[in-house]
Image 1 (cartoon, one colour):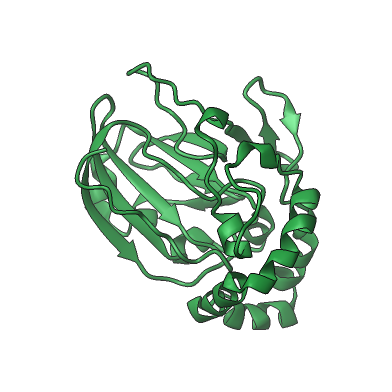
Image 2: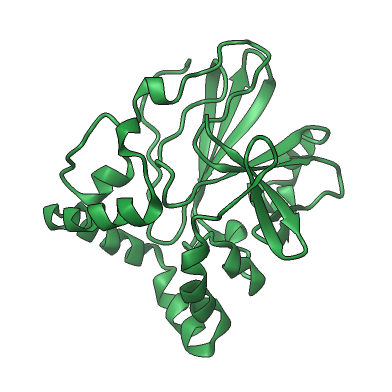
Length: 248
């Protein structure tokens, strides 16, 4: 997979490739608008409406309409998306484009058992778990118990690691499992839908505490017990896990 690393620096979040070379943040252009929403009184008033799940549902209906395809070419151009990585060239809607499947050959899966693969295209941060740990997401700190909504569950993973995969608009919004595993129970935590742009965190908006998310228990073959958590965001509020039985 083509994940990159996020490293916190004095200037905010520095994104690097696998070799540690700094790369541009594809969400940087959204920062000005997000700053207005989260950093001004009128903007925060608008957020009370914009973060409601119903607004994202309405946006979903609009982006499901065939006319929404007119937004695809400028989006591809602006985000520098390599369309030859994907199986389709034409889409019925912008939503279909946003969740486009990738060609298997474009994301070869490492088969070595002791290698943990990336479940998606993303910007990656890795944090060790200790009893007092807080992990930083977009400049704001969170406890694992608050993120999972369960102190006892968080304690179970003490000594492990939190792997935070941030998907930006240029990433394809599908994911796989990181190892062969048995699928345990899934729990959904309802919430609002804040943006996950780093600028929001600069204004003390802890979206990951509030955002809708699903938590699934995985019993993996090579890495033991693991939790996989998907987090919704503003205008990207629907999480769909396709049925596949109890083993993958």
